[in-house]
Image 1 (tube, rainbow, N blue to C red):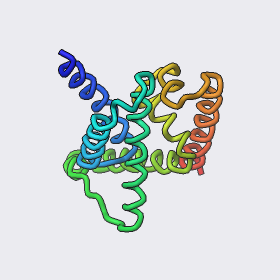
Image 2 (image 1 turned 30 degrees about the horizontal axis):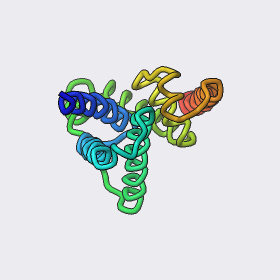
Image 3 (image 1 turned 60 degrees about the vertical axis):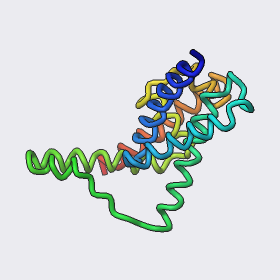
Length: 166
């Protein structure tokens, strides 16, 4: 029974980690690899992790692996061709192009923010985590967290407005 609940827990957390990594801009394969490696590391080190820190530990390991991968990609620049975007170009080229351009602009605006602010915005608005979840995840007071969220939103809005209106 305990094994079944561990599997269910890892599937649930793995899905959240996967969505988080995809929102950060990773390919399907890279996100799956990081989730699998994170779950494997959790199984190896689960006895040394406090029960109240499991979720934050998992997110931190996945985030660190994300940063490691991005560092490696900077050294070896590659061009990523998305098959879905190629298919959508055959239907409505102008709309598809504009949507892709908007997504790219938003991603670029997000990348100008600090890593903490990037993570907060993605976890809060894309994965819909609550302030309680975020507070536990970052081991941060809720009022401090809300202050960081407000600053992140303001900086993001400023970047997006500059991008779209200038």
